[in-house]
Image 1 (cartoon, rainbow, N blue to C red):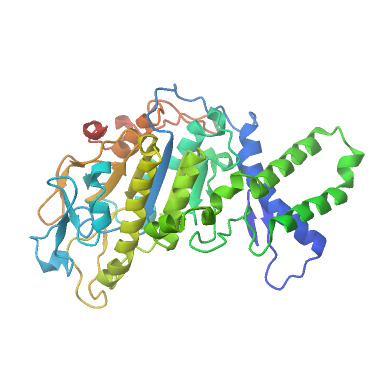
Image 2 (tube, rainbow, N blue to C red):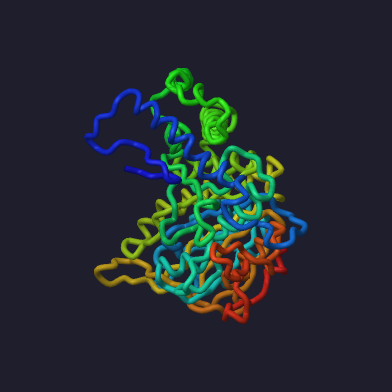
Length: 459
């Protein structure tokens, strides 16, 4: 059984269900999405007010986070070290020039090389943590792991300050993850289910893209409408109690769920509406089509979208994996930046791309790794673009073999704080806490937060 927003959907293997129950469950999936992300968000009594920080002028309206789950190698991507020798470069010893003089990147990223004027590279990101869960928590919340509280990640914070409490009216939830949650920690933290992400499930590279609770495989729109009519006939309680406020609220949720499933809002997930040539430019892969979906969600005004792109935890046979992964990343991300720019959306959309850490600069040739790279939190790279971030720049550097920060360390609090500022979120404000405890938007120096300063050189 799967549960979303407290509503059980889908029968277990081998459990027969009646036609009526099947119809009801189909509606509950879509209704549950709305209940969890929309109606509860409009309930002022659900949690403390989100007016925790003063609203300041924003340059960015949306964020696309490309999460390289598992940690990508900085040396093979955005901080190559061609002179370090084969024990560090492996077979990927060449670099390529970009369309910005003086910036070179890894040889398997030729399309991103032609978009370098649109992004900046941070080559001195650091936190020193080598565990997946703890590093993922650090990079996405800017908080040291191990405290008493589980803080919300950037997506949940943006959902708080730029979602329904801030006037967002969309039927699509304000915090979307394509396709599965990162799974390393509770992304909403103590903010709770009101700011929980909505994970699409499915595979945007397939037709149809079966989105959990929105798009059902093998069911036409007409059949969905017939199901709705059938449910209306079954709903004798509403006719018996026409003035009941709770039933009225459920009826509203029913209407909004079907507006999402059958109306224009849900069409954002129908990638077949896009030009075949454009879809090919993104790459006919799960990641490539997820990037296209992200652009479409930004067009709908969704504040925060995460593309959870797994497969980067390459302890073994690293370079074989890079021959597959890097061309996918190259096509999808380069086309996303170009497409956002052509649609006039890049200036108002932050794009950030990284994982929880990098990979060890020195290749592990010995058995059983056979040319792998280990976890590495001392120094790694981040790509940032749009939303007020300048393009064609490099922030910081690592040493000649990519093993340490050489200058201008950038910590998670610096990156996340810079994004919040561009979004107009008061970084000195507070977050609503269920027990009324003081919780700041960002950790402070008094809390021991390490900081190299905001990214003012590219803002």
